[in-house]
Image 1: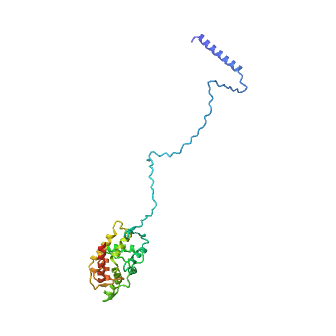
Image 2: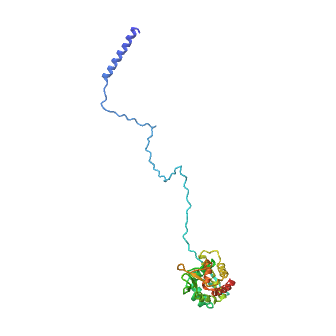
Image 3: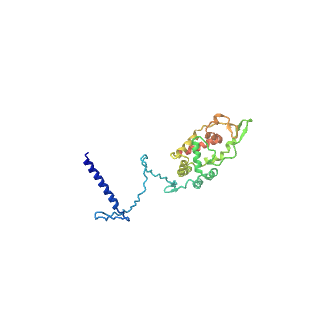
Amino acid sequence: MSKLGLWVVAGIAVFTLLYLVYLAATFEAPTGTTTVIVPATSMQSVVEPAPVITLTLPQTRLQSPEEPPAVAATPVIIDAPVEVEIAVPVVEGLPGEFIELPSLNDSDDFVFEGLRALQNGAALIRVLADEQLIRSIVVFVDNINRGEFPQTSLPYKRIEPAMSVRNIDANLYVMEAAAHERFNQLIDTFVAVDTDQAMILYRTLQPLFQQAYAEIGSRNVDFDDTLRSAINAVLRSPNVEGPYQLVKPSVMFLYADASIENMEEMRKQLIRIGPQNTEKLKAKLRQFSEKL
């Protein structure tokens, strides 16, 4: 650079320095703080605070997407047990006459009244059970039909005295004739009843017999058929000639002859009543069977 150029640059620098010194010497600091408020123009809008709106939403249970949607269960209605009412049977009696039967629980008086009207009915009542006679007869007939013989709840009063036996030796006994005779009154009373009158009474009471039969589980079986089958079972039973030898290994007597001891209980009972009573009983049962 030429000397002239250097002198021009130096002059400008000196001038600038002198000017800055002058500004510093003449500057006055402000004595207070001044706040300048800029008025709002017409284009500016005053923004008011927005009202707070509270929304109450119904509470909703959100299911996890992994869970299957709940299925409304069908309500299970359990009916209270209802007592089954059995209509009181009405049966036909004489022409133009209808008889209203009592309930099975209250049938004894009605049955005994019908028995008193039978020939020899009073004597029959004396040997029969005193209560729930229809139910006892039904259970008895059902057992006989199956070849059995009930030991309790018999439809007739228990036979006394006990079976009479005679010792042959220390371990062997024989049934005496008196053992059969203790059944004579029962068999003779039954045989003396008029068959036709007895069948009329049975037909009158048949709905109650059927109801009692349903109670022991035979709802779909006609009691007439079971009664007929029981009678035929007795009629088919062979007669077994005595003497009847017995053994007593414990409390009860057993037949010494295994062929007799292994018989059905119903057939062994016919042996107990004796051959004469068995023949009387079979003859009367044949009459009833013809009427059924």
